[in-house]
Image (cartoon, rainbow, N blue to C red; front, side):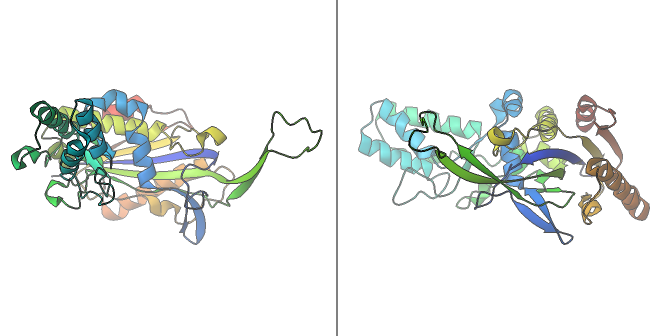
Length: 345
């Protein structure tokens, strides 16, 4: 039976603006009739997959999301002496393998394409060959896509190629939007900047004024990994799947989105992490926070609510998981090392 790994995290962030909406204000969601802060799953996944830890552990098995594949190929061809007109035509043909190219910008793909390392290497090798032989690619040489690319981020988070659905990859990891367990009120930081060369002889005013929204709270984050599908996506490489699960668990606990970090320094480690394994149907514990936590110590109360909701699910449905492990930084109990050993064992 399919084995699932579920991670439930509670992370407290001080005043911050980690994930902005179209107006530059922190993203929110209405839950249980109250406004909460929200960090989108897209923002979280990008922060994790581009983190220094993810790169150092899985760099050789990490894909590249880009629209600019054609531009890279064009630069490679022209650097090797191919005429600009031919280089543009050949590069556009290669880029079109990964998605529909723009009419006005034939070197740019319309949608972001997630390219695995082996696919990128195949592109580089082909471009070198075309430059050396002074010719355009034939159809057989354009077989550059892989149905099961060995890229950890593609295996975890999936890939959709609208024009080449045969090469889509079903995500083995589901990531919920992180939401605060407590209600929030977004505040505005009105700020001024002083011109260092202003001597105040004529004008004592600020050189710049502006405002930025911010708020703080304890976020609940839920992640569900289908381990069997992850191994399948990685061509049966069980060891690489374990590396991916370990790296994802660590970055989920330690890596924050980069939004406005220079302004707020709102980096935070997870204070509570519940890891679960089993073949039973997964379930989020977000319902524990349908009613907003309004206590003076929201983190402690959130931990109590989360564990209580877990126990109630177990009572009415039977044991929802086979085994679990916890980390509680509030009490100094457990450790991230133990959690990582648990999820990969």
